[in-house]
Amino acid sequence: RYIWERRVGPIPKDHCIFHLNRDALDCRIENLVCIPFGYICVLTRYLPSEFPEVNKTTIKYLELKNAIKAKNSKV
Image 1: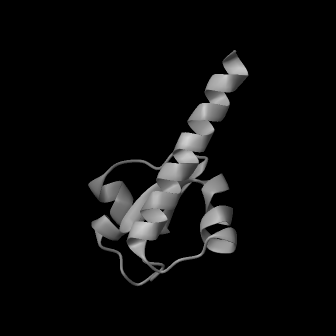
Image 2: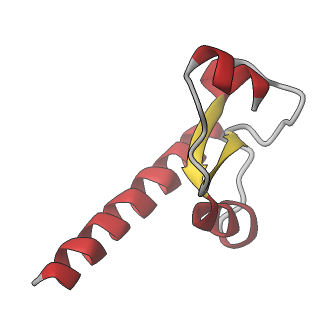
């Protein structure tokens, strides 16, 4: 959290910092991503992966799914 806030800025209340390679000691900024709390369950429970590219793809999938859901709820 400290590294993210110093390099990127404040973390929104409903978000957290996730280590893409699941190594909590690897705090390089390229290994960190700020995501909504709801994504953590999918990333850690349903689709756990130690591979950063798989986690990035899963996050993009969740973003797309939420965008489609939001668009459909407006119609």
